[in-house]
Image (cartoon, rainbow, N blue to C red):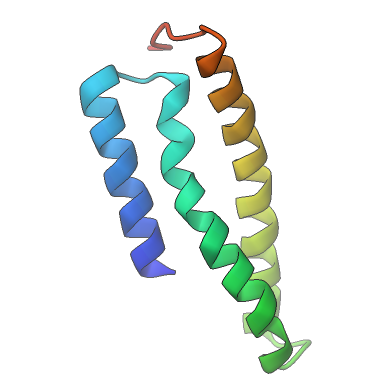
Length: 86
């Protein structure tokens, strides 16, 4: 998970350096997709009711919601909304 976070941050930093703060910056989060799939298949190996299990479920839920926002931003960028926000 740490590696995935660092890779996402690197991708987002590069996009920001080249294009500014545009809607495309969230594509760095797309590296979470394989991580989320992997976590889904690992959940049955983690004891339910533990703090770690709860943390993983929370992480997966928050990452999924964030990815939905990033998909919307990507579609808007591809449709022409390319003006930097800040």
